[in-house]
Amino acid sequence: MAGKAGATPTTYAPSPTTQKTKSLVFKNDDVDWVRPDKRGFQQCRPAFFRTGAVNAASGSAYAEFGNTKVIVSVFGPRESKKAMMYSDVGRLNCNVSYTTFATPIRGQGSDHKEFSSMLHKSLEGAIILETFPKTTVDVFALILESGGSDLPVVISCASVALADAGIMMYDLVASVSVSCIGKNLIIDPILEEESCQDGSLMITCMPSRYEVTQLTVTGEWSAPKISEGVQLCLDACSKLAKIMRSCLKESASSLEE
Amino acid sequence: MGLPNVSGDFSSEMDVDAFRRLFPLRFYERHLVESIRPDARPLGRARDTTLALGAVTSTDGSALAKIGLTTMLAAIKMEVMTPSIETPDEGCIAIDFHMPPICSPLVRPGRPAEAEPVVSKQLCDTILSSGMINMKELSLISGKAAWMAYLDIYCLDADGALFDAALLSAVAAFSHLQIPVVSMNDDGRVVIISEEHQEGKDPVNKEKRKLTLSSIPFSLTSILHKKYILADPTAEEESIMDTLVTVVLDSSGRLVSLYKPGGTVLAYTSAIQDCIALTRQRVKELRNILDEAVSGMEVD
Image (cartoon, rainbow over all chains, first blue to last red; front, side):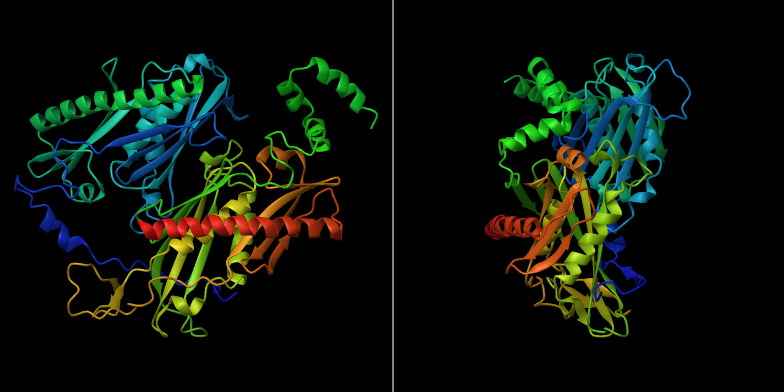
């Protein structure tokens, strides 16, 4: 075949090296810079959810925040793997993967191996596992396009998918992250902002119960900044949960008709 | 077959859904006698098909194809390579088909689906041998640099006729493809010219922004069952009746390839001819759908 010459030759993406332009956009100590997408520092991207994206699954959801696009499918409750021990409570199994074209440079999505276990840990506290003993619920996520804040979007989308599948939960799980760049806290960062952040903080919580299921802080933070960031995230989470809830209500009411 | 009577008795007192699950084949055969399928389609009709171009903004070309519930997302990323010595003025295409665990309850992480490499190979063969793409158009600087087009197709929802949907999305992604304008920098690397600082650099490929697609391949998968031919099967139909025939024709009606991967029914020539005739009709539909999607893009 003319198109496929034996061994794949080494290739590279023709994108110009962006390192230089970054420092131009984000003047670290300057308070007056604008975000690349013209948002305010404490303004989230418009969130869009839709349930029933994948018909083959028991429940599913598609989420789009700016350029971040993810699909989550939920399967089960179904038979656990044969090798598993007997268990009184149900099991939760999570997997997060990227498409090869999700990242600006092809095939970099496999860098995020920790996402699967982080998704698991953020959801397991919210699901009433006692309702499906001896069985497993599988939550699979695919990131179609990475546009920043990927994991928070996956987690929020997964909880909508779980609700769509009729899995019992104490509350919806909403997740938001903030980036610390210089003196500023910016909420719901996009990819370019994440790549030059000094620190990042992500909260997943159940807003109606006011309970946090996961909190991760990385990088350089001062104590007052952390509490400011946490408060910012919690407020955003409760707003996000309203959007998630209205999406579920909409799909439920359209089913009734 | 002395049994139809028995099931006939059952069916009168049994719930339709239960009958469908317990006697799937009989359930289908009862429909086939009436020349109709459970989803209200006539035997030869394909499901509703939609196409959306430019679904993934971070790529150079992308398309989302839906045939019934089967959903495919194809995207192309262009990278630069040094062409091989034998073909210094030709580029390359690498095609990969993926079935991520989200698409079907049968696929689990770490265990790739059986169909994945099969469809991948079929797509590769079809696209490269149809002559749709002239590899010479992917050349940048003869002997020095050429495009490598990475085409990745993801199945987002698997409900039968995977190959048809994958091929449609792949073809649509190629017609949406916008090749970036590039130039050679001082280190001999090919770099995209950004709109802001264009001065001083000569673009290598100012004219070659779109590929000319000649003879686009389209396909239709059909199921052979006894004397019936069911076009564009759903996953349920594929699981019950296992003899599949996939016909690929190009836009001018020439046969590109024909797959009949085994199955319990042996196909007579007449059956194959019927499949080809069905595909011929389907190609017209698909061409219109593709043309509409492309012209819809140009208006925007």
